[in-house]
Image: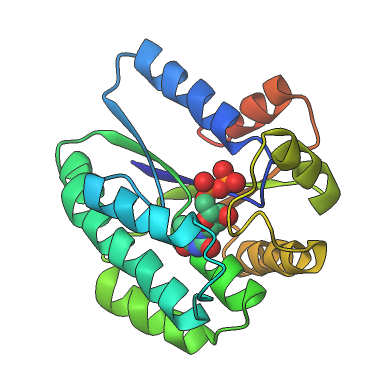
Length: 199
Ligand code: TYD
């Protein structure tokens, strides 16, 4: 089973993923915890390029999209597909929905560009995706409290509002795969809601 986790900054993805990871482990299941962009040494290097702030040269939106997919191609081939083939549960912090929400809804790139990449380079979509949804201000306060802001975190509220509506659009299109979790609730409740999706 392939499970991904989505949402804007500071909505508690990490906590939920950790809880589910421990839950599956306690059930004696083989489970892999990974993230995007990243998840392999090479893909983590691409992640560093994507998140670092370079005041000398602004990254173009197309470059950003393509680097996301370069990292994803490596991650899929090296980590996700082999783990699934071995019957493991894969928990992935972000996947293609983030590309739609951030690069299309957020940056304004066309959905056609993304579809081209998905059709050619993404052979496996998550079986289930948890979208942790919360008002932008709430998450940004949490993200700011964590310290230095990366290239995405430095974006303004309007950008994240667009990203959030991108996730809402995917949810409206594909409610079977993408489950919305109310991330303003206590972490235990968010976890309980996620677990109820498996019943
Ligand atoms: P992540 O470390 O998961 O962010 P956070 O912990 O703040 O939720 O992801 C890094 C950033 O990369 C995040 O701001 C979202 C962005 N991103 C995209 O823009 N497109 C993508 O396809 C992915 C996977 C991530």
